[in-house]
Image 1 (cartoon, one colour):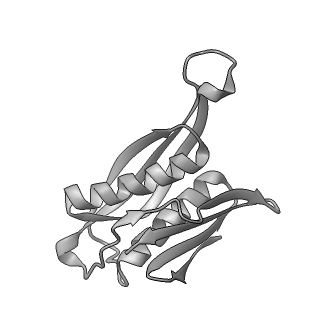
Image 2 (tube, rainbow, N blue to C red):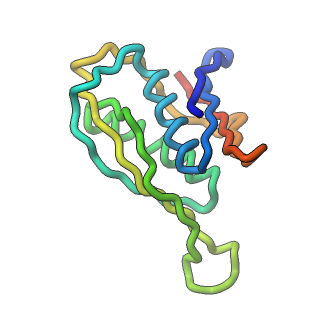
Amino acid sequence: MGFALRDHTADIAVEATGDSITDVFASVADGLAAASCDDIPAATGERFSLSVTAENREALLFDYLDELIYLRDVRAELPVDHHVEHIDRSDADGSTDTSTAEWSLTATARGVPLTEIDAREVKAVTYSEMQLEFIDEHWNAYVVFDV
């Protein structure tokens, strides 16, 4: 399983698959890193943790990728080597009403200083054509990024 970069008019897309939802989220994030940089140094950068919450699975994927882009900008590091540790759906207010459910994610990544790489700017993640679905025993995702 893994990811592939796809041309998309003036943007770039990542198509990813995984055996689990955590695998496909991490693969899309690895695709975001690959869209940002051709050669990622193996031995530099420290691992950091992050967590994200959202109202549904697709919003969680969007918000996770958006947070990685934000962290790249504020930390001046390209997040790479993504590991999504946990994705969970919980009822936000304790009721049985699934419309109040909240999705959460915990993950880690390694931050490679931007001064050590030749990075291209990926401006934003988009909802344009976003797909996240379970098909034939695998999770599949397709995400377009604004470059």
